[in-house]
Amino acid sequence: MSLARKTGASAYNEYKANEISTVSQIKLIVMLFDGAIRFLGVAKDNMTPRKYDVVNNNIIKTQDIITELLLSLNMEEGKEVANNLLSLYVYLKKRLLEANMLKDKTIIEECIKILIELKISWEELEKKDTPNPNTAPGVRPTGISITG
Image 1 (cartoon, rainbow, N blue to C red):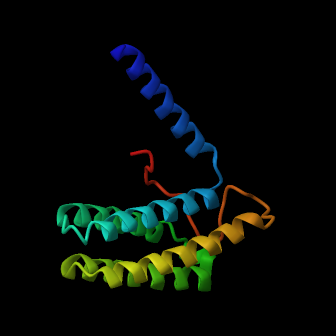
Image 2: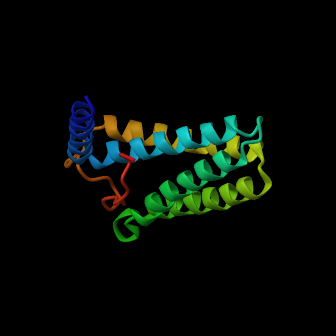
């Protein structure tokens, strides 16, 4: 039975890796925003019972995602859009650091709101017809793994 589970888990991981490698770059960015929002939700939910280790870990995971989004910006091609995203990402990283140091639920809620707005914008971009669906304007391919 253990071998069957391992084989099943291995097959699932292979499936997820294949799914991620075949999605468009814009869809991958939307998935990163989903992950960041989910991690901050976990952090926020664990403020009340004061599980600060869980809060800390999930804020750090979100910061890692924001860092990856920041590093994926193509400042040359993206011009004003990339500059605006850069400013937002830097602001989010600063606020997440403050939220983690102060264990402030209000700051986490502010960051979630910004991330949701950004995610919605990327989803709208995803719906539009683009010449190459595997590239997003002003963004280089990301190198973050969202499989675990």
